[in-house]
Structures are given as structure tokens and as C-alpha cells.
Image (spheres, rainbow, N blue to C red):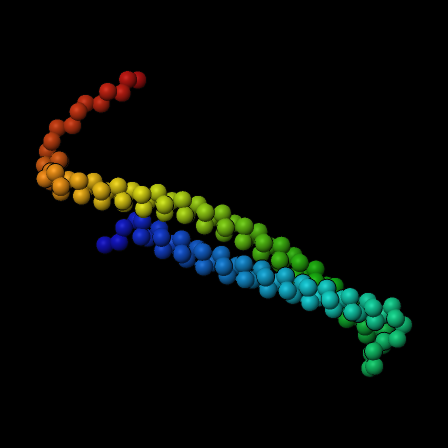
Length: 139
């Protein structure tokens, strides 16, 4: 039987993998952004030079520039959403790591407790039948 700490550890690993995938997707989107920005810059220079490259007219360059601008806006919006997702997943990883750390500490405390019980010869069955002191909490 796997413990809660083990399950949480596996969950942390999975969420970290999801975070890495989201970060990779964000990096890919940013690369697309740079490529589109470079393309726009090249097209603007081609229009400003007054001499379009061979086989292109200023109208075709303007259309390409328009498509590149629309694509760049779409990629920037998508990158913004992806950045938000990366931030959410990063927070989730941190929260799960804290919960997993606490569960592991509980597991270690329980193991130490069992070990001490074995060393002192107190079995769990005896402990259950041992009367517990009354609570002294005053309300």
C-alpha cells in the first residue's frame, strides 16, 4: 500500500512535468513572436526602400505585412495566456510541494514513533488499551 506522502510525491512530479511542458510551449510561442517581428521588420524595410524584391510588388508586400501583423497579435495574445498558465501551474507546484513535504514529515514521524515503540516494547495494541490522561484544556 502506498502512503499519502508517496502519492503526493508522484503528483508533484506530474505537475512539474506539466509546468515544464507549459514553459516549453511559452518558449515556442515567444520564438514565433520573434520570427514574426523579424518578418515584419524585413517587410517594412522592403516597402520603405522603394524597390521591392524581385517577383514582389509593394501591394503584395503590404498584404504580407498585414498578415504578419495579424499573426503577431494572435501569437502575442496566446503567449500572454500561456504565461498566465505557467504562473498558475508554478503556484500549484509550490503548494503541492508544501503539502507533500508535510505528508512526508508525518510519515517520518510515524516511522520514528513505531521504531521507538518497538525499541521500548510497547505494542500498538497495548497502547490502545492504555488509559489516556484527561485533557487539561480550559475553555
